[in-house]
Amino acid sequence: MPAHVIDGKATAATVREEVADGVAGFVALHGRAPGLVGIQVGDDPASEIYQANKAKAAEAAGMVARRITLPDSTTQAELDALIDELNADDAVDGMLVQLPVPEQLSEPLIANRIHPDKDVDGFAPVNLGRLMRGEPGNVPCTPQGVMRMLRDAEVPLVGARAVVVGRSLIVGKPQSMLLLAEHCTVTVAHSRTVDLPALCRTADILVAAVGRPEMIRGDWVKPGAAVMDVGMNRTDDGLCGDVAFDEAVEVAGWITPVPGGVGPMTIAYLLANTLEAAHRRAGDNLKGTAA
Ligand code: GUN
Image (tube, rainbow, N blue to C red; front, side):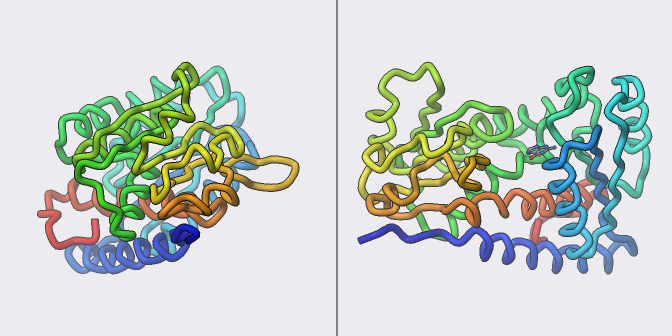
């Protein structure tokens, strides 16, 4: 029997409705809407689309969204000055600098400069440390989206063998921490992993986040496994994931498509993080909120 195909668009719509309800509650409590600022340096067309979509989604959820676009030649000192200004601005609950940035800018310096409470990407060292410690903080959006899909699909997590293919700071590393927190036995695989197909075949939960079009084949998948495809690869034939969907769907128990799978969850959890950041900054008890 083919796998259950997890509908990321529908799940993301549910999260966004939850956030919109939560935003209404925040406004009732504080008389202002949560504020999100997206910073883009340069005019990369993909970043342009991401930034526009993030701002549109934030506004649709009832937040105040601001987009700031800086020239390609922006220096680190100029970007730092803007980040400092936004750190000090009480109307700003969350901010992000769209990646990648031009080469004269340093991603680690940016991640260290944004106040951890406003770092709704969850990339700041303090937030990644909190995640590892199991303390409350801003958690990277895409891995949170994957966990929500697993939870909603009622994929068994406790004691499950999870293999995360990819060790990026944005997905692979935080994903492994979130799966571990749910009592999975987690292996993080990467380009130097020996016999990756055999390792993948041991996975009850397989998260693909390598950025290599359709690298993971159907015969790498354990029958009945949950296959979560984080890949977003632009090829001559259009957008595809890291998993050969047509093959894997025949073997897996659950699978996410590309597009329409994990992708829409990233923005949904950016909104959830912004609402949560707003509550945290306001000193609210987060229990009972959508965040
Ligand atoms: N570029 C690709 N994905 C992301 C993301 O989640 N956050 C930011 N800031 N930039 C990105």
